[in-house]
Image (cartoon, rainbow, N blue to C red; front, side):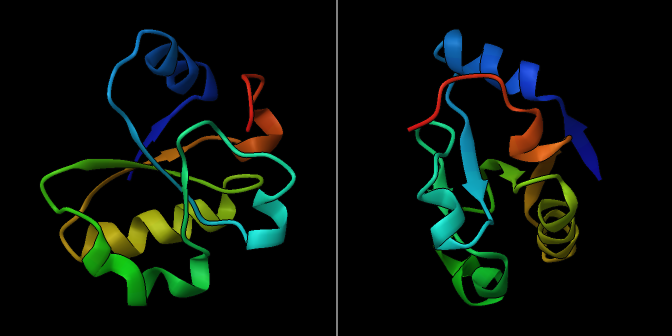
Length: 98
């Protein structure tokens, strides 16, 4: 499983590079703030919502600390999706939130 640092994600956003971010935290956690443009699909719903994802695109998986997003990334990778886990999750995120 590939990983990306929060700083690298922030740099891509600052450089206006198209990046697909999936936040796998629960809805109430995301309500406290998420990376701008991130789509919320709670970990428990990944299996049921994977058809909403495009297998030709790359997705950055995010959670609070990196554990749940790692599980989501491993699952999706096994299903043929291109995924990267953001190390440290939102606890390590220093960029803007919405």
